[in-house]
Image 1 (cartoon, rainbow, N blue to C red):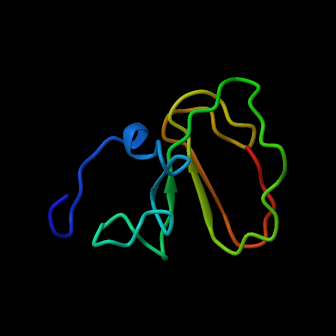
Image 2: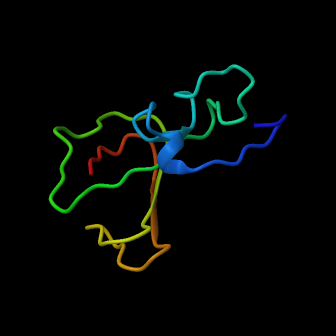
Length: 92
């Protein structure tokens, strides 16, 4: 990392932050990836993998980008995405 830019690998960088590569989960020690405004998570979920419970009363806007596989909402092609606003309970 140099100044206000960073280059890395999502899988490597997210190992110690449960997949989060941008957001308030990153220590704010001058790291450009530390942000209270935007959060990005890299996750790979094997077929059949489920979250134990819904995320409820979330007060952030959420965006999902499908890289590979099929997502139940509308995502079937690489690059498909969905966005929803605060207060929408969700899970993976």
